[in-house]
Image (cartoon, rainbow, N blue to C red):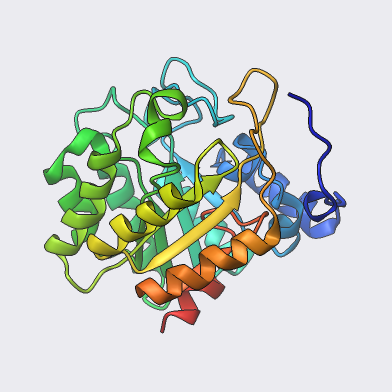
Length: 285
């Protein structure tokens, strides 16, 4: 179904000198960003501010989620120099807050957790004032792998549930809703002080009550930061957009989330899980 994109989702894409600098830097250091791979609508805003969400462990994902534009295919070899390249990127861009995510690597025994650990440790060694947020996969429920990442000391541990349980077979066929909740729950059990975060997309065909139920589930596992954004299909081959959600509905979800006890909430059509992550983190302090 073709629907006209509403005014509140129309963006002017403008490259500038800062954007070109970030793109050049990423190419030189052989780094990937989810901004580019997932066709994020906020790419030019973030690159223009010299920020990005770095994607480690290659650019080929072992999962087949129907909402995501990240390439599916034979996994890339793990680049042992990648953590050092992240440090170099932080230094050159002058970052004081970094978000690191990854493709899902079901082919690796630990799901790639050790690469997250190396990245966190090297970034903190570079600067003990640098804030590090990680957006992790579920590691196939491997608690030991999760524990290693948590113990490495990220300032925020993010794991997205993405959608409501009913839509998982269509949207995340190789994932499991309860397993994703368990990632967040176990993270708090391993380190009760860690700040956990999750995100959900809307417009995939979910119902309002289902969204509110997900928010309640997240609070029950101790999640304190939340992002809600409009799903935008990367192509006609991806899961279709069922509905464009009005900004009033996003405001309603934000109000309900704060009532439930979330400390930091970003809920708007163009919100993405790591968009303006530093601002959301600071709002929780």
